Image (tube, rainbow, N blue to C red; front, side):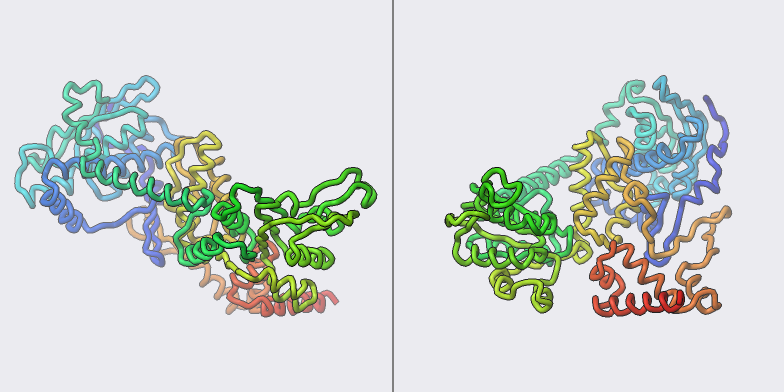
Length: 567
C-alpha cells in the first residue's frame, strides 16, 4: 500500500488520551510507559557534550542506540494496544507518536507494510527536526546526515513492528543544509552497504568493558552468596534486612537457640534455612514443622515420637521431629500456637538434651539446634497465661526481627525482578520486564502478605502477560491499585485537560454536604483496612497509623453502635 499524503491512521484524540500528566507525583505517562518532558535546548546541550566528549563516531552510535530503544518501546505499545487497526494504520501510529513526543513532524511519502509476506518499504519527510537544527547550530553544516536519534527510533520501531531488521537511511538532512529531512527504510538485506551503517548499532568498546566489569561484579556477588550459603530468594539491601542478616551470620557460628520474629510471609523459614546452611550443622538434616498446622492432640507425637500401641491408631513406632533432626537443626514455625502440655515437654528436651517417645520409658539423647519463629507477641502470650515464661526466656536467647516488606521498599524492585525471572523460566516465557506503571504499583502497594504475597502476585503476572511482552499492572492486581494522585490528560486541542475533581475532594464534599457522616467515613476506613489486612488486626492498625488496642477499641465501638441501631 502506498501513501502520498498524511492521513490520520488513529484518531489523534485517542493517542492524546493515552498521555497523562500526574501533577502531584511529577510523572508523565504514555499508557503504562513513563515519559519525560525535556527542554529541547537542554537536550541539545547534552548532545553537544556527548560529541565533544566521545567524538562524532562514538556519539553517533550511542544516540542511534538510544533512539532504537525508544522506538522499540513505542512498538510494544502499538502491537499490544491497537489490535483493531489495519496493519498499515497500526504501523503509522509510530510516526504519530514520534510527532506527539515533540521529536519531529512526520509526513508519509510511501508506506508499504506486509508482515506476513515480509515486505517493507517506507519513505517519510521530516520537518522541524530538533536534532538537525541543533547540530547545525552547534557545529555548522555537516557533510553527512546527523539525525541519529531519530533514525535509531525509526529503525527500532519498524524492526520491532515487523519482527525483522529494518534499516533506514537519511537521504536528505536539515543538518546538511537541506530544507527538510527525508528517510527511506527497507529490510537490511535490500541495502547493498548495510554493514557500514549497522556497525553503529553494535555495542561500543567502552560499553563492552563496562559490561565485562558488571559481569565480574555479578560473579563476585554470586561467589559471596555461595560462601554465605544464602537461599536464592534472600535478596535485599535495605538497612532493616541487612541488620537482620548480619545478626543471622553472627548466630550461625554458635549453637544458641534463635527466635525469629516477623509478620506472616516475611521469610522466616528462609532465614532458618540460611542459618542452617551457614552453620557447622549444614551436612545434617534441617527439619521444619509448622506448629499451627498440626492438631493439638497430635503435636506431642509429631515432635517427640510415638511407640506402637501408645494410643488407638498408633500401629507402628515412629520417630519424632527431634530424633529426625538429630545432629542438625529443628525449625519450629508459629511456636506461639503450641499447647501448654507440649510446651512443658519441649522445655525439658531443651534443658536435658533428651527425648522420650509417647508410650515409651526409654530416654534417647539428641543433639539438636532449635530455631523458633512466631508472628505473635510471645511476651503478651506469657502475660495472658498462654505461653510458659520459662520456655519464653529459653527461646528468647537470641532474637532476630525480620522487617515487613513495606519497611524495606528498596528491596521490592529487585525481589520482583528475581521472581519474574524465576517464574518466566518455569512457565517457558520470555518477558521484557514490568511496565513503568506496574513498577510504580509494586513499590507503592502496602503488601500486607509481605514477600509471599509479592511472589504470588508476580507469578500471576507472569502467567497472564503475553509472551515477548511486559507485565502490566492489570496482570499483577485483580483490581486497580490506588494511584494516590490524579492524572491530567490531554484535551483534543493538545492542552492539559484540568477537568474532574480529586477523589479526596469529592469525599470531603460528601461529608460537608451531609451525604455521609464522619462516623460513616470512619467505619468505611476501618472496614477497608481490615479487608486489605485480611482480618489481621495488627496489620490493619499499622495501615491506619493506630496502635492495635486503639483499632480494637474503635472496632468494638463500631460493632456496639451497629447492634444498637438494630435494636
